Image (cartoon, rainbow, N blue to C red):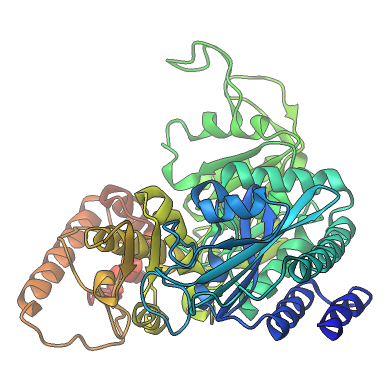
Length: 525
């Protein structure tokens, strides 16, 4: 006991990363207080975030627990002493279905926890669970209080180190508080511990401190908009507007007005002066999504704004200066578009001062359980469930899937599977099974309903298995080939216009055409 407390005290003076400090603390606790599962949770933005786990499935690290939704956590936070719950307590356990080696609801078990306070400030909580009732009856409050005091000190040290690192990166505390508030207000965070995501986060922290233009590349669904928001929130412009515009959705007749504004009477319907997106973003950041879809005329006008920092409203004689940071995103190969003459070379170089490539989900090794847990917890709250777990078989199936639709597809799969699991729930407890996910080995999705323009495309490299649905799949493929050919003909072989008429992204249309055997056509302009 004394040796364990000394280990924690000595760790307070060591130069450790926050993660190492959390994990060593949890390991020390379990040496003295054996249990089947233990969790250290940090209190952040009114949520409890797991920072170290032992004995629970890895997707726990991706979950975010709102204490208002979990009465056990509420009792722990409200108490100045360690809290022991009766073995037969009817309060739902947040870790139902997450304890390794245990299936289903933790109906009868030992559970205790303590809040970690320093100077009356809540830093987090420490929880212990045992599958044997009465496992913690012999632990006296004094011992647990001593651990909680040192645990709180260790967490404060870790948080202080994290804060100092952030202070050095972002120059001042105000920027950090604004980042935290914006994330809390708008939701969303870059979930993942893989090497690919660690590298991406370092790149974002590096470029966020500057005012360089950033070109964000990556496949559809990888989270390019979230990356843009992260750059903005980590920058010194975080307290200024982040204005988003989808270039692919700009009507040709109104695009110039949307971007640069117009004066009263400049065209039919212009009944008053109107600010464009550049002026709205003055002092902040302008995010140009699907930048590759911008028309040649607008590319030229966009270049002038980036070169001179001045915008001219439609119908105006004078220009106005704007201070705007540009973030652009595309799922197209702009270098290839430049070579083909579809995108201005000078504009490309202006936009891609600092290129960032968001990795596809299939390359983010180990991130799928965390993301699945994150989306599952969001769905649990939306569906009003006490517990929503993901079966190990479902996680294994997800890990083997190629995810052509990336993180967006994973979110949709978890959402659909959660709805199906809820239909089989008992007493507010549901389990996402592999059969709920409709995933097939080799990167294909089991077709459920007919969709003329599906978001999810099967892996063209895999020969589909011959099933009773083969005839329907062949008929669907023929329909898609004919429809694409008709739309291309109607739009003079213009792929961008054909994609818009189909309600699709141009890059997705190219990939679908290639998969359907129309590869030779995709070389058309």
